[in-house]
Image (cartoon, rainbow over all chains, first blue to last red; front, top):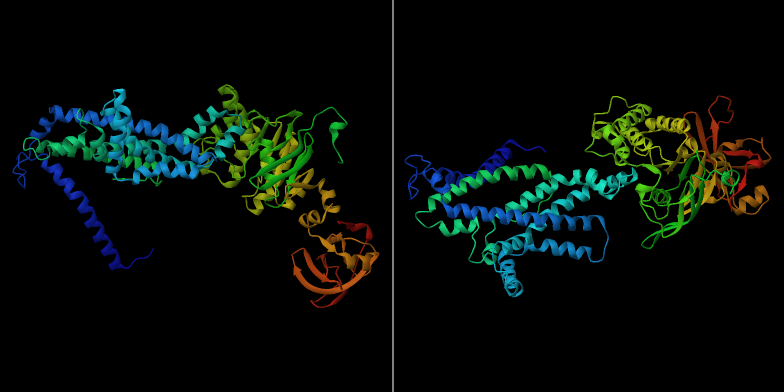
Length: 271
Length: 342
């Protein structure tokens, strides 16, 4: 495409402004995590790692982080199992109600989190509590899985449709049984989209707060909940900056990785 | 049916299809096909797209399951046997090479899944690559090869398994004309060397005539005619076959009655008709079209009853005919070259 010189300058300017909007606040957070002042006086008078060492010794943070990781891993594993099963069924077989099922699976990602949250909360209390299962990590994992499934499903479905079934036919033709075909042909061609789907699902679960609030109960606290609860406490607020800085770095890598792996396949995202 | 050696010898047919039927929804793709393919044949299934030829191939390979009828391979009923247990291998239209494996791994694949040890399968795969003239390409990936080379890898990958029958689905369809001609010759030689039965699907009548020992002409899910290239070309059994294989000149009722003194529809091949009075059938018409085709010139002559006959005249310098469009010309042919199609 050919653009005039002025059009290119305008585009460059708009792009720069957009990037600044996104990344300047992140930069401020990272810098503030090294700001020794409790009130974040700006610009920082000096740089210190005081809050970093405090953060690593703060039990609340560590336990919230572990809870979030457990919830994310749990939800991703469920999403991988159920989402890939569904994607295979929809991509490879014809059955009654296929389109409806496809829609029902994708719907949760579009529903407002608060609706999903309320619905899950009522359902858990009515169905699970009589069996002695209270709100906690287990219910958070199930809550997150409802929308993580979509991510895996969409990623894998796009890949399966693009690859088609000819390679699997060729494998069967050459004498491979169903398991060998899956192991040597199907899995290698979908592996990267599974990894990308799982990474995205984990990221979504990790930052979820609305559904989490309705499904976590009083016993546990995920990292976003901890941040939310401590942001305005004078002694804890600086630690929030440290946590944010760690997460920015900790998440840039896997997101970049998942983007490379999915190679432009639609991910279907709620941010 | 003309030749079916299984009745003469005890060797079972490579392929036998019995009353094969396959529907896709309301579409009847294969509408009752009976066919015997003899051991060692180079057999072509020829027909326009949608005629059911590819579906028949997929039924033989086992990728589709027939609604009724049976498929026998080497005398054994395999109608309900999955593809991986059938002693046939397929060369796919788009080759279907595994993109995440290199060339040697692709060729070895069939041997690997059958549990053949590493040394033997490497040896056999290298030999198969040698046969298709692709030694030295072992470590490349499929995407690094040209279409013609990928085609050869697909051949090697299938042949390394030494199948009873090799199935080829429009094997040369994706290649350019020159390469296609070369591969036609090569495939034919390869088949003669190794003696495996080849069954190939094509919509290209020239390809079928050039390569096959016998041809089945498909139309609307049925076989219209089975025969040698000569039989199919010289004695087409129907209007459709006459039209699909080669150029056909049809004489409809009125022209037949007047020129031949017979009832029905008759066909004469273009190269059998001459200008002048050489043959025992004589008529005249107006030249409507003249097309120079290099070694031939093609004339289209319209007869009194509206039927058009195409004539091919070799440009060998002997021609005294110097027709122009609109000229009235005398044409003739020998009555032994006309055949009734309806």
